[in-house]
Amino acid sequence: MFNKENINYMPTEYEMKEYINNDLWDHFCQYMKNTYNVQPKFEFSKCNWEFGWNVKFKKGSKSLCTVYPRKNYFTVLIVIGKKEKETFENIFSSFSYDIQQIYKETKEGNNQKWLMIDLEDNDQRYEDIKKIIEIRNK
Image (cartoon, rainbow, N blue to C red):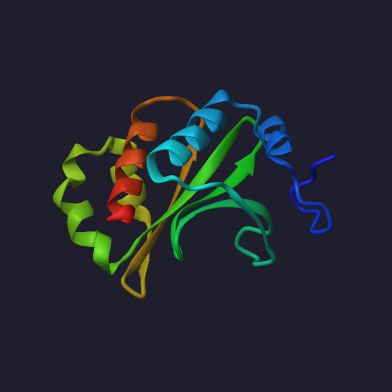
């Protein structure tokens, strides 16, 4: 049985789906596969910030995003780096209030903002995440 903190047991895609227990997870994975031709890669993080299993979506060596499983939702980490910052800020007003607030409240370090965005509904926040990932991809 999947335990997100058990380093000795890598979950299957099915177990991750069951743990998250939200149809949006399937939509998100399918979107990433179809749009960017990337497969989910399960990794275990030992860092104090977010200990446990996560799912990375990488295109080549570049991380498009990292997903942290939760019960009934998931959190997407997207890094807005030096290269993405100008593009992101040029369309800042097109993002939902939630995303704007997350961006404003996230501290910058080394010319990067690490945005942690919870997803549970197929709503504007989800559409915004897709736009931010597209910026990361360029």
